[in-house]
Image (cartoon, rainbow over all chains, first blue to last red; front, side):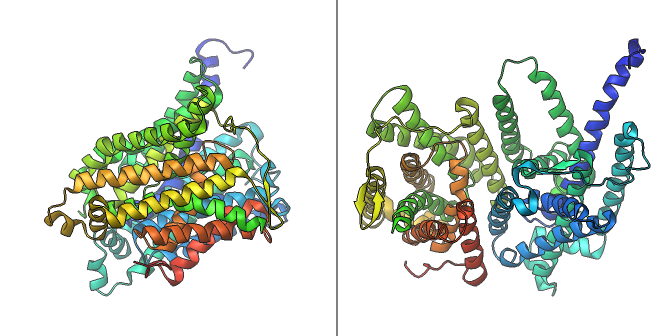
Length: 311
Length: 284
């Protein structure tokens, strides 16, 4: 950096920012794709998506610290997130749609309390660090984020492609028909409850994977990383991009995080205290959620027709 | 004994605040995730009146209820009524309510900061009561809560408004063809429900620290009370609130206090598993 001047120096200074935005966007895109499967395609109201994010991250890093090989830890993290999706689905998915919302949001808060208080297991509010990152011995540290970005984009593309295939499979069509009108698939002899459970499990497992990716990027996880607001980041991403559009979800993630890093620059210009800036961001998120649902439920990029069963 | 007293105090607050949640849930057929933040809003308005303007707490109580109800009416006119006109689905309304919850709570943080605060009232010694201590504030909470619940009972069973409200929460279409002006009754349901929630919020501020997230953490116990009591059943909700309040406090005898909050979650999940229509569903 020192010897460089002019545009090259400027570019060098901006590049890490861009890499960071893209990295976070890709993590949140994966996180939100999981929710989009549940809400966008199946119509399930999951308000505790962040819990599965946390389960994936914590399981993986703790197992790894206890000496479990990294690959196995990741698989365990993703599987456990999916398993908890299954557990939460059992009492709620036979009932009205709002019970899932209440139970999942309650679960995500209870889980955060456990992460905060069970210090013997989770190290409490101090968080967990010092775990292994994939290929950390091979990739030089100054290029590590670039490597992660390539890896994460590849994972994102893979998940996107598999979800697109799934949604055009008979299984995906059943999910969409459940979203439109549950009585139709059940009249055709489909076990609606079981399909919903599967959707919740798969969505939660995807959230778990996103949590693992977040942990590798941050090199640190703590209960504060998994506040309820993360769930609503995912909701905003989906609704911005257009419900039931996987492509829109990816675009939504990019928009949200570009906006957030923008507000970080602006925050240096406006005379607000840090808690006010944080609150202001949340007010924007909340208002956006309300206004989008009121006036443009199909999202900025979605088409109204896609809200209904079309393909 | 101490735990039972604490449980009764918290239980009456949960009961009082949850009635509105239950009534709106049944009448408008959606679960209002912003309900807890209306509770916190009321506590902050009372704090403002009491501390910044130096009024006594009775005035603050009245101002807080009026302000909260006014806010609720504005939201009804700006958000819920237009959405009903558009025939919005239940899920749309729920998502809007959670957006509203975020907005309300963060306005509180924006204005007052995230620190805990309390009313400016003299600290009075508690009385000895069968080996436990009960403070004047706790007595005030229980008495006020029960007085308001009794008032609600009178309103629902003896007045025309109350009957219209019950009819509407039973069956909207049937109520409409019997000539009930649904929009007006819905507005009154909001007024009464949020009025009770606001009263509960001010009382809650008497026995706990006032902070922006106080309503949020009350939301889960309220949901549990509503589900336990059977959605739309005010008496069941009161009983449910008491059960939740008592079991939360009694749990501290065996569990760390941090997990009080988890108790309502567990109770709720069990009820959903075995009797989703609510334990007290038969009361009405």
